[in-house]
Image: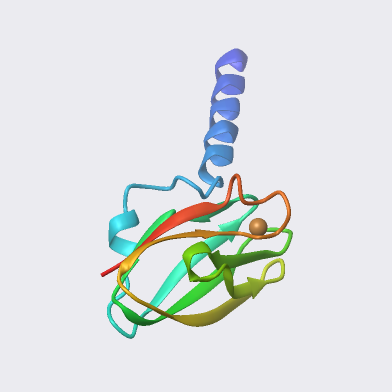
Length: 126
Ligand SMILES: [Cu+2]
């Protein structure tokens, strides 16, 4: 009995750890990654990931809300918009920023040194 209980405890701990990764919490990216015209796109930034990594929006002014759930600063930069830094957040902070975008495919990333390799995503504007 004792051995069984230990196994179950370990299993529960493993599941708890897996549950707080944040970067891969379901296949709902298409649903929560799209902004209607005039809407706000919410993106979670952690250490080190963006969730979701694929978002879409309508052309025009697009507002981004960056929800930094990490322990260090993160920002949201759009490469094809002249590497404009749209939103910058300190650890634990949520901030918004907006930018005018034409239809196209854009790459967004975090410009904090060392973060980009893990923090990059694709924005489709139509
Ligand atoms: Cu970052």
